[in-house]
Image 1 (cartoon, helix red, strand yellow):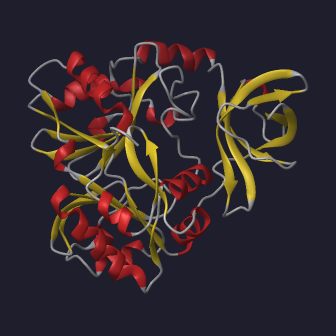
Image 2 (image 1 turned 45 degrees about the vertical axis):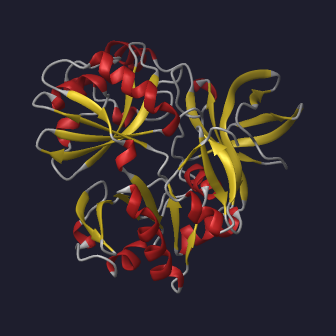
Length: 362
């Protein structure tokens, strides 16, 4: 795997005999002891993920809030100090450049967490569209990111920190030491479970990783890879950039209308998204469950009789439901729950039906 970037935890993954794969320009662990085992551990106990490939950009200056408000669709004025907000960042036509988490650090400082493969594109876009007293800097090299996800994550993490984790509500964060390592501790995640994301200095990442794994091992905490991360997020119907979102897919198509705050004032893409809201999106993101045997994969055509009505964005065997499930973008007139459709798998039409989403809710 030539010229791939490696996270500060690369040697840890080798030590744990992880199977490594290329992901977004990075060499990442896809699994340690098996995707289904790791998936079930997160649903029932907790899993520890290395997500240090994510990018971190710092936007700061007296005009930081106003500048970001023009770049993103959500209303960042609602994210007070100590809060995080999820938001798409769109082009003029409403297509999504990236979806990000933004942390309000206070003192006119915002930390933007961006998708690994989009970091350079995002940085250029932000620089090109900033105005006023504000600057942006790539701080990715200053952060490692670990995610502890699952129902017992709070009790395990609490034993390693003096922070009162009960006070760190969903989409909020606190700053303090975990196992003696200075961290930003955020109650966020990408699995559909309760959990925390821990930002620390790369040089401290190994210490933090082993502390969390050792502290939680008797309770059932396991190391978990990208494979389980994907099956978990599909069950929870959480979008993945490049699949449910891209520069041709707008937030209204992707079911993220709740992140588009038209009345907050002007932002890039507002006019286009207003028009799409009035006219209706060309496609709608739906949940599919296979009726016949077959695993739906990204890009497979979705048909009603012989007419193609859309395509699969993500699909997988879902261990929690013991079913083959998919997310798909289909024409809105075919998006009713209960609609029978077929997915073309290796040239053969295989029966499926539209079902409510999310597939899984804790």
